[in-house]
Image 1 (cartoon, rainbow over the protein chains, first blue to last red):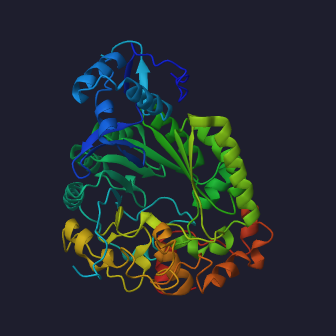
Image 2: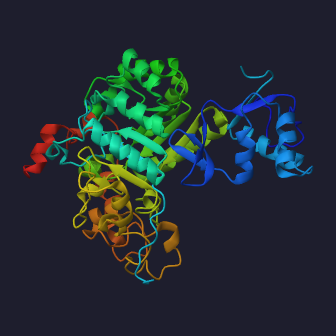
Length: 104
Length: 384
């Protein structure tokens, strides 16, 4: 989904299924007490919120379902804009890719 | 607590495992020590297993498997499988020589994450000249194989005076072979590259031209190919923050088990490098004099010690300081505040640099010293 950029005018395809892009590996690192994204010769250490969002990007939940789940986890109904902004950035950076159908 | 206490050790997130100094290529800019022929006793499979487990327990997560040529080790697949089991992200850094379909499949099954394939140039002529082998066509075939097995691929090309004018074509080659990343690494002048510095150092004009070409491509190709541009700092007025700071993030394990804060540290005098054969990696990382020697800023001389920029570059590169001043603890002379900055100016203003050497044939006036066991032996005994 190359057309999904940082431009917030582009609506997030909330019925679609985001997942960690093929180039990246997502895992928990005890030494850093954080989730990290690993890629060729590099690593991004994620803050707690980013980790909680990406943890759910497994290709089996739609963005809608992920946001609903996060509302419960963070006990807040005012998170949609923040999650959407993060997913937009993560997509722009190539961390997350989208499928129209649920992953097998 | 003592004010003399070195900075805390941090987490060695990046571990580079130099599995062997054996290599089918003979690149004139190799970062291996020039006396590699001295090193005979490689760590065994079991010793590497222990090192991998100890590193992972310290928090290491990125593992670079390199050499020499790591494919020279028949146990490479076993080492990848163990590293993968421990949770490392595994990077194979290879010349491609020896990477056939069987080994590629074995590495895939072992859980290898990524392959970095080196080219020496975009042309067969210069690639084969610089590596002193006929490997260009083989590398093209290996690139196809890497993509066929679904690996992300980094193409690496070391850049210097003889190939820097081909940077545009090198980028085209990376696009053609389907690399996700291109590492354009300007030669760092240690090891064999330092021996050949007079022939390899690009001119200022060449660097400026190549920077412009890279910037232009970046704009045009966007995220299709990410270009990592490693610059040499000899033409700068501030040194680079080497390895993100001595003993902060990186450790390199040499084929015989010596543990180094950077690839080139083996040549530094007065640094007694610890070995995994004598101590645990945790002891080495946290407590060894070698790893604590340049941590923090207590070691710094003037002008670094009172410099407002000291936390940015941490005094620069220790190996460059040693090679250009003879003092491992000196301010990196790339800094124009260094009293020895003139040593750098002498190098970059040397008359030999004015007309850029273009073709390999012209180099023969002063031949390159290729990285071969024979040349290493010769350098060991000090023969010309």
